[in-house]
Structures are given as C-alpha cells and as structure tokens.
Image (cartoon, rainbow, N blue to C red; front, side, top):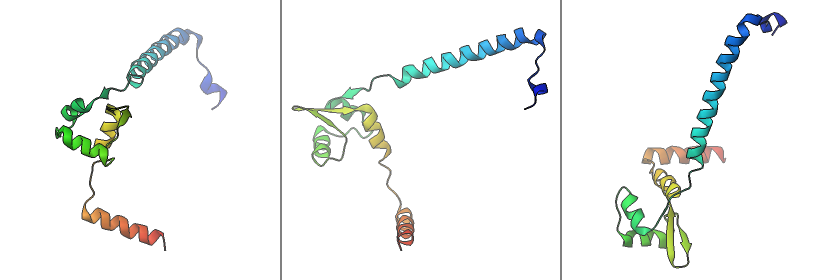
Length: 115
C-alpha cells in the first residue's frame, strides 16, 4: 500500500470517525449479545425431565437401562442421576446410523490406507 492510498483529506475525518464509532458500537453490542448466550449455564435434568425432553419420550426403565449399559451420558451424585442438556443434545446428534453403502465405503478406505 503506498502513502497516497493512506491520504485522507482532513475534512473527511469527522464523517469517517462517526462511521467507525457506529461500527465499533455494533461490534461491541454483537459481542455482548453472544457472550450472554455462551455463558448461559447448562441445564441439568433428572430422569423425568430427560424422558419428557427426549424426542421418543422413553420410559424411566429404558433410560435406566441406557445408563446401566453406558449408552447415554450421565452424571451420578450419590444415588441421583443427572443429565446435562448440552451432553444429551450432542448424544442425540451422534445417533445417526450410517447406511450399508457408507460402512462398506469406509471399510474399503480403511483397508486401502493401511496396506
């Protein structure tokens, strides 16, 4: 960048500074709004809450079975089992099952890369 490109006429400075000030305020407000969302504490659920939250509304017995076989993320506090909403959301998103074609394709790729 040459020095000619950096030359700004003095009479344009107030308009440029005003525009910059507005941009900085917008960026600051955006950051503040998003920080509130980022620092919002995770919601904890007990087994009843989880049964109501889960899309299939499983029975308590089913959820206890998932805990016993460690299929679902959970936290145990003494005799109490708690579930973190963010961990349950991530677990639900991982529930995607690959098609047979995807499994075969992945297997072929693995074998080819490990020869």
